[in-house]
Image (cartoon, rainbow over all chains, first blue to last red; front, side, top):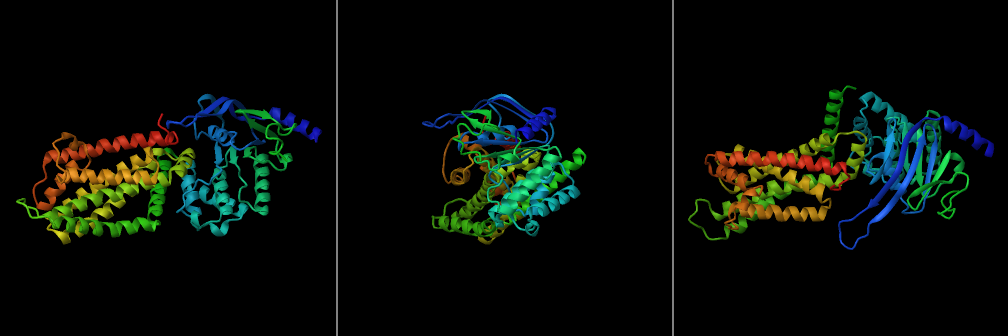
Length: 238
Length: 248
């Protein structure tokens, strides 16, 4: 294990950095009286390399989703900066989709956003539907899908343009065992192609699947790849 | 794909998605077909119980006209509001994927226009059954304009106050008060009433119903009001939604 980790470390030092976030600060203020200002990130630093699978673990409310939104560009940091090289894919924790569109129409709409042409959109739709096993639901409206199938579509939308960095926030919520395994097969393929994958979860199972694991606590990130979780009481990583 | 080809693709796919979403919500269609006759008939009936005055228009006809303007403004306003609120978070994700905010705005505006067109058509037809409308086409066009005007206000409120109940309440009071002021039912000397959206369109619509010539001043003021509102809503919508709904 230690030998393979050393080998992984050597490979890691040669990899291209695809995302860098430095000294990230974020607090949530409220204009309403009697409400608190909550400081979520206090100088977090993060670097993601091509072809690595990075896990972010932390207790509930520790700022995992805020960190991801900052890295994706959904919100701006109060201080610090994020630099990205290449295309970004984001699979949010909640499936942010249009309920009354069909799955195929959803692909078409987001594909247009990514700047893909019709053939590339159709190919991505077929490829991902086959891989994650939701082909029979392509003409169903999103609001008629089960929670697991919605999550598959949610993930596929993040993947359809073949991003260089993929951010996944609690991606396996609602997946059955088969889909969970298919998800990891897909993630390994992405890694082999050089895609950086960052997975956020309050609970990281099978730590050997990750190249690095960072723990978020008190607004900063600590590498706990070898040491295990410190402040989450060890409950976050198995 | 080149820039203009990509933009036209985004526009056509966005428009098609917005229209599909709109038509697949049965409550939208139910409101569009049921509310206009109910509101116009109710307003007409309520005011027809008032005694006749020396004015050329009977109270019943005045009520029906006021009801027509109310419903032509209120329905597109609520549709504009709900469109912005219900799709807000998915719109954020779509925008992060690279879909331009201004194209998204245009697609939302189109749905408002379609709902305004439908409401105006149904409303003017219902009004003709209650009173004589001398210039039906002109009246219908003014109602479409009123719908777009208030649809924009609905979108604005949806962007600034993204809550369905509160937003709907603001709209219902605003439209009601606006129409009451514009029609003269609620009398006031304040020139501030000219700043309300229905002030000029009401005069134009009244003239169309009675067969009088449209006053050029009212027409220019109404168009200017529309252009200003469109520009303001576009700026606020794109700025606010870019910041995840937070005014900076």
